[in-house]
Length: 362
Image (cartoon, rainbow, N blue to C red; front, side, top):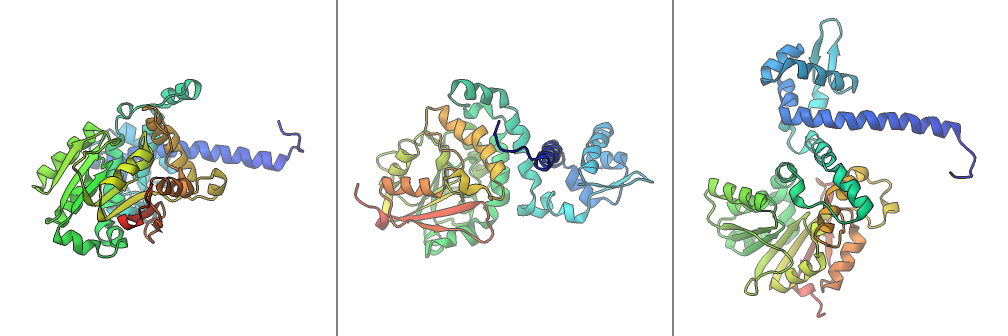
């Protein structure tokens, strides 16, 4: 214990904070349930109602709905008329908790808490013995990540993200070859393929489950200009070349990110562009003390991004590898004069933009 004088007020304040943390952690679980079960969406459309009416409107069991309401009422999220036992979701809260709110629906992110908590025992084993937890242990990760992508990236990819590269929209309309590295379930490139029918799109990901989802969606939308492959991203085919290569929140997860960036540089055409999205943060923990969602992002990193990479004997960069390390690695593989864009709508991500003309000879 520190030899500095014990501060009783500081001690009491931290005890209060710990109680708030425990309550907030419990509420994260209940918010996830409210999102997945559709309870928030139902309550947005209902007048103040009994727990039975809320349950009936959703087809859920009233006893469970009643107990769920207890957590949300005592947590200050749902309002209660004590005389009539009527429950309501205030519109100011609904605007951040329902699917109708689209990109503002923060309830979606609460799903990461129970999802990551489910592999806590395996993470503790890694703390003791090293190694990592493979993708296969995360039963809903691709499902939640896909929903996250559909909500946060897909609606803005055409109007806000791609325009950071001058002339790219016109090129996509004329027709170019595009590769998405670590494409996940393919929501982004399927949306691009639909909007730019003259361009040709390829998505690579290590997960068979994610690739199957992307393929199914492409078939459902009758998209003939997109294909998906299960691919170990450490090596690409010798005959491949692309005009645009994208990597959305994907490079840090890889076992050998440096080699992947080298491969991307190799297969990028002479006038091509590489667009990489990564979390906007510093590589130094101490510089992230005021990061708006730092605790959440470091938790996701420790319990998913870092450990998945380490499970493959990888670099284990983690979600918060930060701008300094990112630029260092990009420059090491030959990318120079990298441009970084931070978009007004997006407090989470930085967009790194590189062209072939920026490549140094190694």
